Image (tube, rainbow, N blue to C red; front, top):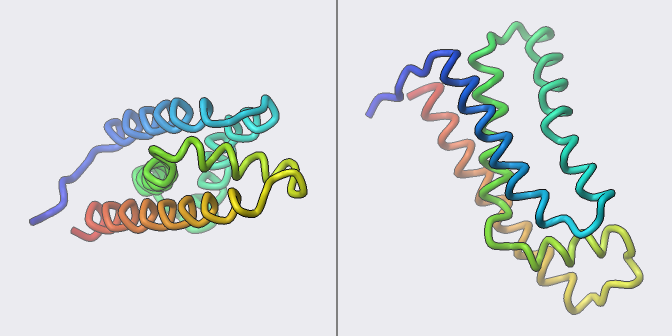
Length: 132
């Protein structure tokens, strides 16, 4: 099966949709305003990073938008259904001594596994879209 040829204007729509979906899923999971601010900055840092990458490596806008959207998909798939685990992980990050290891260990393990699977799925999708 051959990959579809997606024009750049559609990639802009996909990237905007992925940004909205990313923020809609990640922001409610964050227990503090500090954590919410940090999460809200991720799309901005992604755009800056990919713009610099594009200039240095000569990638076109279509390729950069596909990379941005793929990373967003990986981050979204990596945390869906893991709100309780995410709350434990964020609390542990903000107060390492105040989080019991009996809760933090399994939560971190589940998040790591799901994020890893999410990124593998997202990369497989990106590879198919780029190399068919």
